Image (cartoon, rainbow, N blue to C red; front, side, top):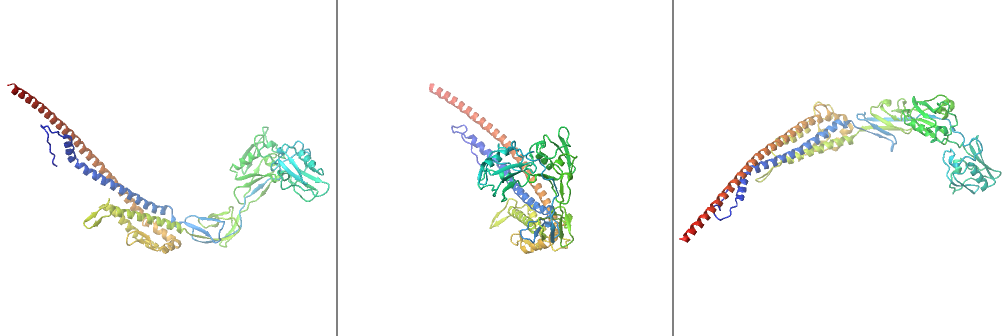
Length: 575
């Protein structure tokens, strides 16, 4: 490089800074070379990381075949179209057809309390103090109108039951109404003709709440007792007909339900709260109040012929609710499901879910809900199997394409085009070795499948990619010989999956090592660049100082020259 320096000791301007820059640029060429090498290294690390991701994807794919045990996956189908039975099977269930004939469904045991456990609406026929709003009926009365013999009767919730009776008589003087405390019901009657109740435009439900319905005669009475429990009121004032005597002075009592203790207080707890308390325990029953029949029901959560035990001292809440045998409680036994398999002996199950523990078919579970005979077919889950194989093929081919792209060298005439990993023999070896392993047969197998070709899978002759060349062959192997397919893929040590998994583990380790080595090389290059740059910085400083010194010398020389010139010119002029 020719760098000309002119202008010193002359009147010409000297651009010394440009000279320094040119000198430093010339000496910076090694840094540019090192930076170029760093860029190449960085590109290689990026490419290796992408290959690593693809290697991992292939390994994950074949590992999911092993951990998911996909070749033991099963499906269950019924010969009954749109069956409401629900069938399922676990991996490895034996293939075959199984005829299930269900002759009895399992039901839950139920302890039915006595009916009419609440007291009457009123103790006497005098109902002048009983308002519609305070009546303990199964459904609350709504305000509005109802009809008697075509006459409209308007009621309000503040009306007493006697007020309603009076309004009926006022609307139709031929009709009389009364309350019977013995039968806990209402009677409407007239001396002659059919008594007709209700109209299409009635707005009050009074007649239905009082259980009054037309019968074509002159008199209509409540079809059943009217009083029910006030389930949200304290137990002491809920309207129970039986007195509670088995409680302490504070109103505390307790009973056991299937061995679980249920505590209550008649002054602070309601029937609804006791029901919720029962349902929230481990007693295994569901409690409910049947307001239509005025009784409590206890139903086992599980089906089958198992009992329900409610125990308490005489005079307690169990008696008051009519749950004890002495007060009318009745145990309705549950039933076990009865069924046959393949016309064999009758089997019994406490549940409608028929599991292998009762029918003996490993891994098969059938939930039945009807008396029916259905044949269930346990088959290989070919869809899951095929999907897993195709996932491996897709990821295997993606890896091969990536390796081919990154290591490709193209020669066009005299031009040679390389790729980011061209010349990396190890990466090239990964691709070729994986193809070799995929093509190899698995030794020691006695079944129908020992290599991918037995599944209709082979390499594409033009691209070296795996393809399913015979889908029928694959489908047949998966459906008819799943055990052979499983042995090919999962045979210990020599199987397709452990063989590829082991090689991929080594390849991934080598890839990581190679990335680390290249990254370390870049770190070393960074150190070299820093060293050179430090020297260049020193060189720039020295050059700058030298040129400044020369400029100072030039300035001093020019000053002396000016002095001499002025001095001699002045002397010559004077002489």
